[in-house]
View 1 (cartoon, rainbow, N blue to C red):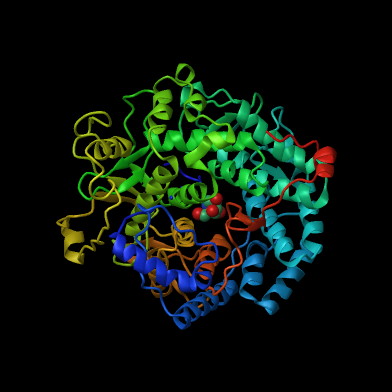
View 2 (view 1 turned 45 degrees about the vertical axis):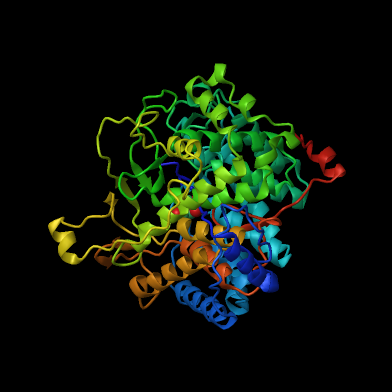
Length: 581
Ligand code: DMJ
């Protein structure tokens, strides 16, 4: 899993004739459809003139809002501080839910961060949910209460930084004021704080907060990554600040791009790290399934540093943030002209240093990188959506295992290669005819109960490893971003189908419930706060009339709390000692 430990897709084409007709139609009302819709390149332009009517969109947005209200009465808590209220603040502001917001403000005002139940509190979850929620509420309301409480919270979290390296520990005992955790940290849990601390530093002009974010970025930039070809691995030594394994799973990767975007594209190191990560993913971790040719992302056994490392074939729901992230990068960065930023991809991947992985960097220089990233984003997003559409419930499983025709490869560079980039190379060499590998439109295959029971169904080239559905946001997050970035209505329609399935399959008298199985249903008594903070927010923004959260002006933290893009002023650069890479 290239999981965000917590994952991107799109493209096709039409004839020039249809393209022109559709674009003319779109041009007449595009500001209403997608305020920052940018016509994509031609491979990306299968735009359907099948937009739902404004009335339908409005009805859909209202339906999502009603779901939010219903869910808000079901409640999950963490730390005993009212997690759902904190995590839901900005969704309420975006939905215009004044009464609920006022009540949640009370909870924020009265929360006592010096006590918690249970003890100790997880650092990462507290940052992305509570701190992210407070900061986003401030950005949208300008109510200083949220900044005051954010500072109170950050103070309570300080003991997490009692490490030699400057990476935080796993958790904090807020009563004893002690950081708690093992000497080995997990990437996402120790390197997903940079957006929140940088924005807090911007608003308060407090160097302490800026240093926390900058230190983590510096540590990542200085890590010795020869063994992983420039990619950040999962487990790190919290004393030395260096990686201790080669496994490539994780999603603190998301913050590499988003930190660069949040800080007005001024930090070059984060951009370079993002380019290394995505080059490694695209060159070595994207595969095609054997029969339907679904594009998926998978970790490798051991290290992908060597040519022979086969993929684990595991594909997780958590990885489905990747198509959205790739699309966002392709939309926001001059990937087709990195020279304009003084960046040379081949140099970034120095073959001498990175060995086999270095060759991947060289290989990608032969492509229009913006286009390649968008292809990857589209193909992956289609697979993420199919994982939903293939199931009788219409909801996606937590994890699948992709089937493989032969267990011993070849995984790459052979005639039967399953590595996506090999297939794209071959397609390109043969004149780029037809659809890009992994991007052909797929039809969902839903097995009948008999086929499931007798194991006679055919068409799915995967089996369910973890069949539950956890109301997670990653797939709708990517569908939302693909819709906003490409303007292709199919992504939004797919989002609506998912919302309908949520309503049909998971609604309870008091909220919404996770499912034991996407095949047979069966509700568990659990409704995670991210369902309100993320899943319903992305769905709502997809349908609301004028989505104010434009990707050029806002950056979502990993819990979908939007923070406004900013640039450091000269004075702040001096006061905070900001280094602009
Ligand atoms: C959320 O808390 C965040 O999206 C996090 O980054 C990953 N896990 C959950 C949702 O699946």
